[in-house]
Image (cartoon, rainbow, N blue to C red; front, side, top):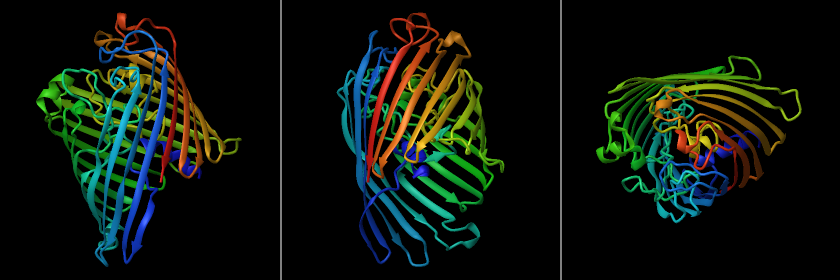
Length: 437
């Protein structure tokens, strides 16, 4: 249960869950019914000028989505296993719309989310390990590393007028839709040693300018940690949306990432780092982070303390980053990362966190962020944020997670920031309830 709780929130926000209701299992054929539903209630004392749709004052809204469908496998004797999934998502936003004004409160949409087919090799190629070849395609969530650059396609705008129709059905915070529209993914290697990935990813998200990417990834996985090297090539964008969002540089852009994560053989320790360089038409950009975690296993609640420094150059393109390891990765700050900014560019961030487990099914924690803008001529999105949260896994099918946040910007919207009406410290409240079968 402890491991399940640590992963559940990230899974609900990012990738399809492994929980399912078995409908059929006979002669190597399985068919499962899948349900994932999230509801969130939100209130922010302050509103932010991201889309020109908000006025100074508070915002109160609700979001929800349900993802439902079928998944299955078919054993192929000694030739591996076929697998696939088909699901729909129904999403909505109610109330005022989110505090950044990217949703207006009347978004409703039902559409196909997952529609994919794949094949795993089983023990057909022993030198590559079990399932050493995994080939899949279609609509699906794809992750690279820990989501610093690619964690599905999770940005879900609403009806805000940004010069074109960017409406993806609302549920902006909950990120109702996460699948890439079209993918082709080849994974080589088992769970240990050398492994790699070749991917083609195509977004149908206008906010992302319908970007197409090619990805090559090489990793070495060991008990003490994982090292990875990735290359991402921008293949195409939709020019209309790219011009509106300032993403014309993605066509032909090269991004290279070197990363590592592991314990280094020390019990209680986890360290992580990633360095990314981008070759854009306008020059070179970069981003990097260094993180350390220490778990005090001998103390009550087994608390974990974290410090992380991250830096994103002025014109860095964060691509398709998303939530991967729970609150704070890679949406840094519940208010800053979702409504106020910065959004993983033109900033440096100091992050300190602590979390503990009063019970196997309950985690409580605190997150602190200090944001500094690098080039204030582009606007000053510096600020400070403190978030207090809990993750309560009531049972195997129900998650409850409340958050209280306090955000203090350095500048108001009238002075180069985004907070409307002043730079007072604002209080932010959210309650997430999730269920899955």
